[in-house]
Length: 111
Length: 114
Image (cartoon, rainbow over the protein chains, first blue to last red):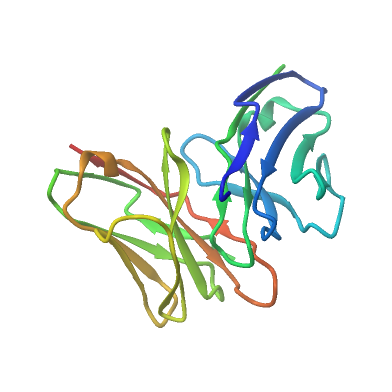
């Protein structure tokens, strides 16, 4: 019940396309859902986060969609660029700083 | 404002040895968490410290320990190293104010156990 399931494992998108990464959870106590971007040799960088009282949050080209009843949330990267090529992690926490991370999605954006 | 800093960045140790990793949080941040990242297990929570007290703990053996100092800097220690402890160890800091749970990660310490 503590797991966060992330898909797909890898994703190839053409430049200018939309990248979509999905996560699902079981624990209804989770109340904070961040997304992180990680480049090789670097630590994860916080991209955007959402709470379950909001169905969508947008920051620049990054949008989180949240479906509380389905216990799913997704990251959409609009107008994907080669510089977006990285590994993306979703995470969830239940009122603490103990994050449960998804397994990661390796995104490659073709020029 | 400077980000989270971790030292050393790379470390090679032998099985059975012990190791201490250091983390300096973002100025003003009072909570420090540690995570282990491996290709097989992904990112796993080790523990979180706030005001020099361990506030939360993950499912790791007692060989993994940590502490936090009065200036919020934190160290983690791994004793009796095993080959499986080879990983990227990440430190994350947070303001720990109100109901925001944003964490900012450092670059990590790459530990190799031979």
